[in-house]
Image (cartoon, rainbow, N blue to C red; front, top):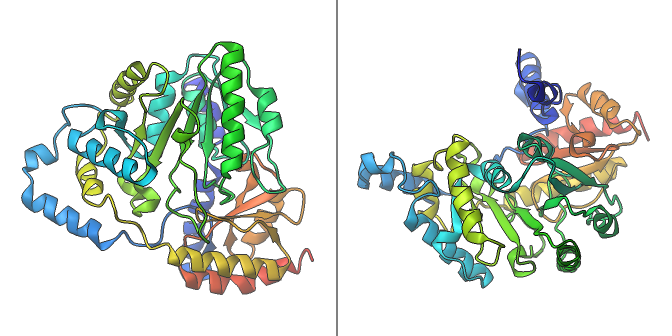
Length: 395
């Protein structure tokens, strides 16, 4: 008999993955070219050529025993961490050192490491809906309580008045995700400044430390000149989780990092805890070859012009069909208002046309659906006539 906690997790397993698996099933029946799968945020743009070159150089030049062995510290190679810190300092005017960096098994691994390090049973973690559904599972892993701030469906900026009311003496952390999955919205500097001021005031009122965890796998994927504020500059108790899954198109390699600045309360203890949590969660250390690869490619980026073209094509095409959605400033998702209250019914109707989309209830925002446009341009072009047929059922 499986653990009681796992029963709920299995029962509520990711709708995103389920839809992706359904896409594979339909492709086997009708052919992949006749299935329009917008379910999974799996980059379809190849990693930069420099990544391939870095892998070759490392395998040819490095001592294989060292390259593929354990790192001396569970936090990763010292030289890689120094390289990451220096890059951040150059880009954002910060003052990090290598010791402030913990290399992680992607952003998900980083979030689990920092939540393991911070959360006591019963502690509250606040997330702004819509949010990546795994936040709930990650928080439950450590017997924390996820507290939702309801979605602002006008512009999908956080509802700060509700946020202020939901902060309590039990609040240990707040997770923020910008550019946001699933909306593609970038939280404005004004929003960040107001959020930081609220958190500072509540820390003083309660005499507690409230940590702001910035989940940033989509930081580099922004369009039309949008700028993403770097949160450590606005609030001292900020911890950043980053992933190269999207910025270098390396989702399966599971490589990222945490930034734990000196300004964080008890930063030495938090860093030590994150180092130990990396080990006891079973990661031991982030993948060693990939640590070295990202250090060599620290200034490389995926060419997001492909995503931008898809964004324009899909957004304009869906608007022409009569669907409502906010134009994303970042990431590679469209969050579309369902034409019926039950968005799961709408997802089922779309599947009749071999269109696979994810219900917004998976992101704590029912009444909407998410489309991942990190697909081939041909998929979007070929899907739009099917969306027109689907739209005729509602408009």
